[in-house]
Image (cartoon, rainbow, N blue to C red):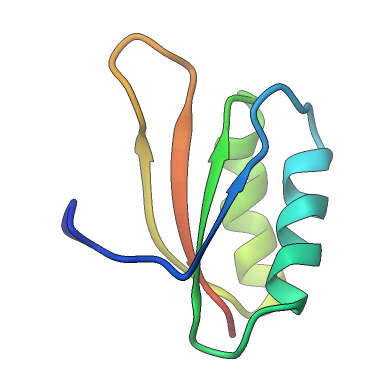
Length: 82
């Protein structure tokens, strides 16, 4: 996935620990249309495991997962609603 990938909604879950980032993403995705893309920002170290697992279990597509900044725990996830 390229850096220029666009998203429809953004959710900033920084400062929240497991399972809050995934619970917030689930709630946000429910309000979105099928095929729309959510950009999730999370700094919880467990999110690198939790977010891909959530996507697989809930039928959403994880388009991209990357560090959002060098030397920071912040990760950016692009999730297409299934």
